[in-house]
Image (cartoon, rainbow, N blue to C red; front, side, top):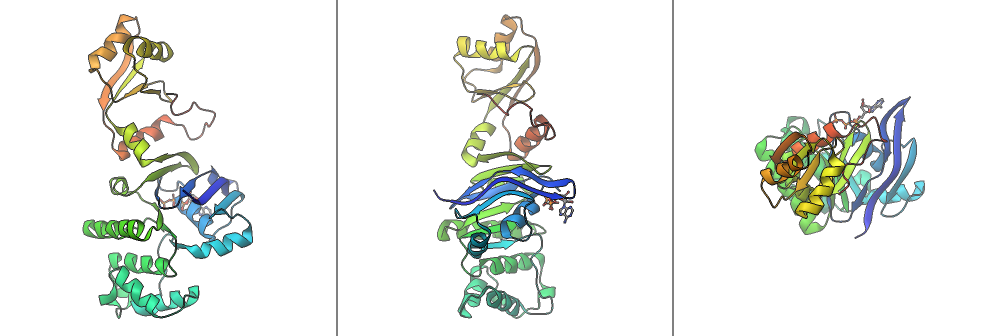
Length: 316
Ligand SMILES: Nc1ncnc2c1ncn2[C@@H]1O[C@H](COP(=O)(O)OP(=O)(O)OP(=O)(O)O)[C@@H](O)[C@H]1O
């Protein structure tokens, strides 16, 4: 599958502060790419760099395989985006706002505006003044503006922000339809992890401007599946025992030395008994199934973002 977005060593500094630091991500055509991170992690900064609203201090951006500044500008015409709040003329109608956007983007034919209003379910409100729209309607209008010009990639910063529960479901359904039926690649950030979980096919986790990891949804589902976590006095010795005595290879040694056994075939006692029988003391023993939220919180706890010579996340 073609890489539509790639970054390498992407860094954005404001003075001595790195809002984004050495970030490498890859988005492939057709994916729904979920960017996760706390407030201030650097999500909007990454999106701004991709959309040409800010420039990297160092590092490379490739869009549809192209990376020269001139080509990047051309390729950006294939991307629709909403970064932070969509910008409107508050006193103009929905239709006029969309028309302004169409003309600005050089998209011919007013029928493009009509089509987009239908597409996002705003045709009925075409004459309403923008300042009087509900938050959900504003988000839909923002999406219509991003969609004008038939982009192949949509970059959306917090598209569910400020929406009520039914607005969130409607936004999700719309994005899923655009992805499935039109093949549009969707790159979005969200703090609603349970919501993101229903859409994303790949995730990237950012913390303090650094990429903790990029991982596919399937791989993540496996990591979140049923697992036993055991911390013992000698993790290296325990993993040898696990393999030799129990034939278990589906384990990872986490950053803090905890051995995480995925899809355990035996009950907890078998794994704790193995440690005890060989004189290892047990410091922690738990059985868990992780939500995306829990996975993210655990990962942040286990990886120290400030010490990047720290151990790998897993060595299974
Ligand atoms: N123009 C700027 N000048 C100085 N610092 C900035 C600038 N823009 C962003 N930052 C800082 O960069 C860091 C990352 O900001 P960014 O907006 O990318 O975070 P975010 O992950 O999108 O956060 P949120 O979830 O709150 O929207 C923050 O500490 C922010 O204060």
